[in-house]
Length: 492
Image (cartoon, rainbow, N blue to C red; front, side, top):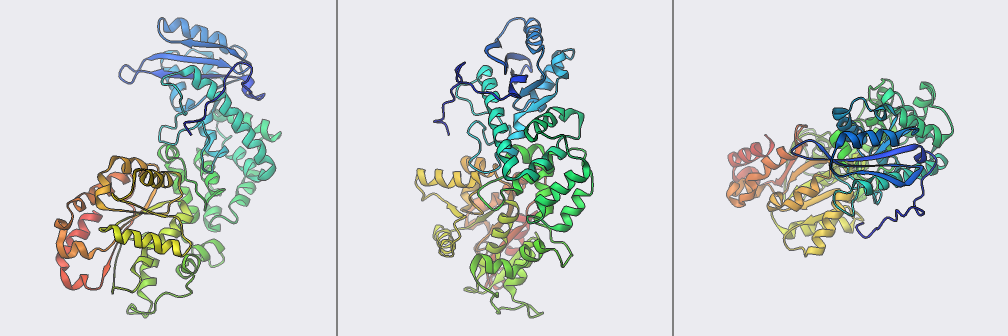
């Protein structure tokens, strides 16, 4: 990614008709002072005449900005809606520029480029910034932004041929509010059609969800009119490429948590309608066991009191998102109990399952075992990996290639590990070989003391993901009280 060098020479820069009607801006604001100390603006129809302010009289520079904006139809930026416009409004609310329809390329990027690798100009982290080649260069960023809009329009143009209903659904969803007038104009131009009416827009969205979501959830969600359509637009974008190596951008999950919630409602909550094909297949433990491992039935023994295989009962509970303590005799397939839910969760929502395992050999066995079944979305991170191997594993996790990440408890305090998992939605935690804690308690490995804290910290203000602990049957005989104590500290 860092090897890409954009060519923004005056004659080389190509902008489409819509970008030619824009004035692109980018501000640099002091973190401590909160003041604008550097900004740049470029007209799409005259990219060879940029306005650059790097100190001096801000009021005079803003008058020049107002003059440059004269005749422009749109104001353009990356993170424009949440950052640049509020900053300008705070210092000069009288600017006519602020009354122009706004187009934010940050909002458009997850729609135009939902599949990995992400667009070469867009960083993949919470603040959603552009990929810089020089530090603090607003002029470069405005040129990048104009080029990014060109690439987004090209991507939408291709989509109008390959998936016109999705484009129609987005047009309908994100054009309802007056503040989104710029996006409405963009989709008008790309589609060559006005915004669909409610009947046509809703029908287009339902068509996009027909084979990718629970029919009950689709009907209920599309039957209510949201105040902000962007979470639904981001959810539809991810669902259009679901099942591959793509994750919802972290800034979307951070700024629009409803988007990830919608994905879970669409695909990860079983409805009661027996006619729902999605739920009948994707929430059926036996179906998913057959899909991932080729087995038609779970092991008949050990069985629960009702005669149902214990494996199946544990998998059912885990797929419902419950906290689970699974105790099975050695050699009866404990790993299946978390692997089936983890792989199903990954396919449904893109979420990552993190397995904390005490021994490197156990991690390698799990990875090799899954690979033997054709499952390549599992990787281990441990101290025995070389630097290139560790870097490759982290990158696969970051980009969404990985469903199951096996780590030692020591990794939870590794800064690189923490940074990588911030990029992903964590769907569940698994404490494998829990008998190690039941027998020796927290003294077995000091870093187990930090597991509960890390789980809470990673959840932030949201709900704690389900936690699953697995161990052999002898766990119940060895130390019931330590097991309960360890279990409680992990889950609270």
